[in-house]
Amino acid sequence: MLFVTACLVMTGLCMATEWTFDADTELLPRAQWAEQLALSLLPAYSLAPDPTPDLSQCAQLLEEFANNSATLSNCLVSMARPVRLCQHCYKEYGELKATMSKIGNPIIQNSTVTCSTILLRSDRVQVIVELNDFFGELWSDSKCDNCLQTNSTGVLNSTSEFMDSFDTLIQCFNNTMKEPPISSQGNVSRVCLNCNETYRHLNNLYNDLEHKNGLCIDLEDAMNSTRKLWSKTFNCTLPCTDTVPVIAVSAFILFLPVVFYLSSFLHSEQKKRKLILPKRFKSAPSVANIQDKRN
Image 1 (tube, rainbow, N blue to C red):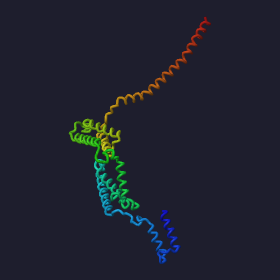
Image 2: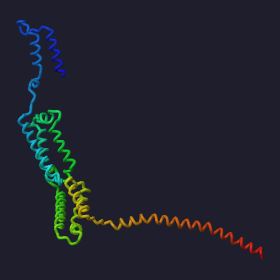
Image 3: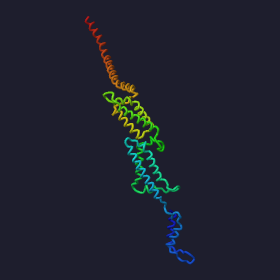
Image 4: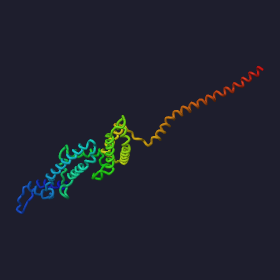
């Protein structure tokens, strides 16, 4: 900034004063001489054109992002019901993130020229940025990273174990309902008997994953649908292992009012007896005195 200011000051001085150009004392036009002097003092890099990214490469990245977005959208919608998007769409989501990384990386090695200026910040709406943020927010709300390996390279073993147990339970439901009924109630009660152990195992896996923060939308949706089938459709209940302690504590709490009122009643009766007995003792001597006077 100081350098430019000095050039401008020198230009003004040159225009206000006559300067000789050579030994023949021919005057160079002041404006032309000042322009040549200012250009000679400017650094060479300032005259170089600004670097611009290769439009063909940026167009290729834009097409790649469009294809990745379409593929990911198709996968998310296809796996929306039942929800299995974390297990089946992680590859498409990874490809979308890779394309966004390419857009922000330099096109040429050891260069600062990128396509982000043209593709991401060239308009007010910023369609690519908004679309990428939408996919990222959906992925984060689904907590898919809890069910995937590092860098989303595959599904965790715990997630696969849970889904295998879930498939086994659903198969037990279907097989039991296909059997001929054994009573007037049909096969509903037999589902509770045949599939009880499998359901308990699945429920324990879910509780363990919930404690370890290993749940995603796929597992939550699978367990919610299973519990609805178990409780509402088949009218089954999961036996509680703490039934006896719960009943004992409940009975003790219910019995407390009875103990309270009974103790209050006995305490009040005791006070009544203490108040009545002294009166009887006082009346007995008085009667004896009256009898002595008569005699």
